[in-house]
Length: 330
Image (cartoon, rainbow, N blue to C red):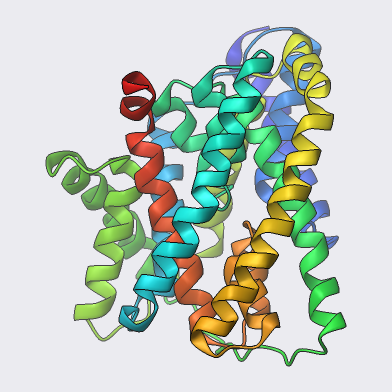
């Protein structure tokens, strides 16, 4: 079946799944919908379903813009040192766990990127640049995201934490022009300046710069974000195959054990950060949780939580860009 005919099945199926999963409040609903929609077609036809590279670049840029929004207008200076310490500790755990996983049938790049905490929506986009198996990385990252997202509300209820205060913002019409411009110009600038992962980090840096210098609230249109997340899901799901799923299932016990250990280690780090910054344990736990940034931001009651999560996200992006060189040196 030609690619176009298969997309006439995969795209509507993905949209329908995205609407259903969003209604059910499933974490990262549109990414998962893209994985299931494209993956189903790829598995049934037993042939890869490739995504247009320009669409995929746009999707990565959209994620970069979204990741930058919590940074705009924030003073991160008081949180840089504890954020770097916490981020380095958790990234080290992901790196070590990935090297162990690489002894069981996946490449070192795949093992490390599949276990790096945070940035689940970024990892499939970064996996291609690092030469990792995008299918295994996306499945592992989504599994961790699901585990963390399901436990965070439980933790909030146990600590009887207050709800975060979030301002309601409306998307103005010119954001349909401004956000794509940030993506296109950011990708160009990131490539010119030789940023790691320029299609993500370029739009991210430009969004922070514009949001800081210009008195305007950047609110990406929901439809643009949905298209971006769907494209990332399609890239992950379009390459699914029965052998790939069998490999993931074979390593599932080890992956689940690592996720449980990582969550416990992050809880311990959260306790230390809470003592360091004078926060409650609840805030420290949120600040160091291994991913589920959207859920964390929804539950956050302190700017320290946002700052530490974003600092680690930046560290993860930089580390992922440096990973191939580091592994070659090893």
